[in-house]
Structures are given as structure tokens and as C-alpha cells.
Length: 111
Image 1 (cartoon, rainbow, N blue to C red):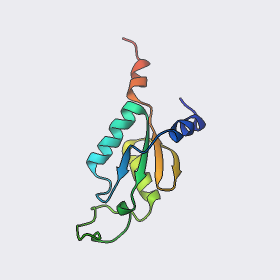
Image 2 (cartoon, rainbow, N blue to C red):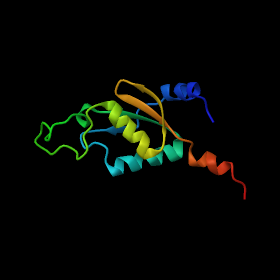
Image 3 (cartoon, one colour):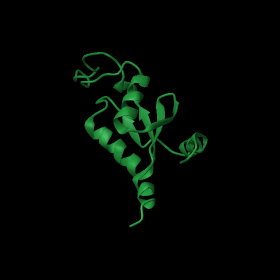
Image 4 (cartoon, rainbow, N blue to C red):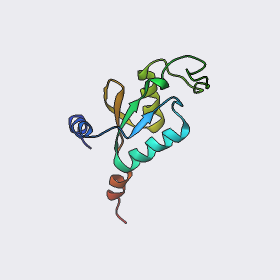
């Protein structure tokens, strides 16, 4: 298993590959994050401000997501819980998650 400091070093080189926008944390977005964690192990995610708030309607008149988060910390903890991953770091509106990739788990099993 990698140390937290080595994961943070690797994360510093990554660009956010997933963005959480005004639709919020949808099942398809959770599935996308889960897939990336399974393949890569380390995923950097950016939270767009439109995904936070408690208004019933967005500025463009469309309905807000069914689950709204008042803070980015609530949203991050929900992502961590739903993807069964660990939070490596959070800087502003960007956070990085880690989970042992499936490919490395398979290497440990011999047929």
C-alpha cells in the first residue's frame, strides 16, 4: 500500500478528470468515479460552485438536483462513502480520492 505522502505527490501531477456540476452527484457520475478508481486508483475531482447551495431553482430556472449540499465537505464525504474510497487531499474546490485499483488486486492472486 502506498503512503499518504506518495499519493499526494502523485496527485499533484494530475489534472481534475471529473467535474461535479449543477446536476450534482448523479448515479452516473458516481459510476464514472468508481470506474476511474478501479482502473487508476487515484482520481482528482473538481467541484463546480453550481453543485452547492440550497435554492430550489437554479439561476436559469431549471430545477436544482434532488440532493443539494450546503458545503463542499458534505459533498466530498458523500462521494467518499458512495465510492468506498479514501480522501487523499483537498485544496479549495478540488479533491483527490484513492482506492486500490482492481488491476493491482488481481496481480496478487495466482491461478
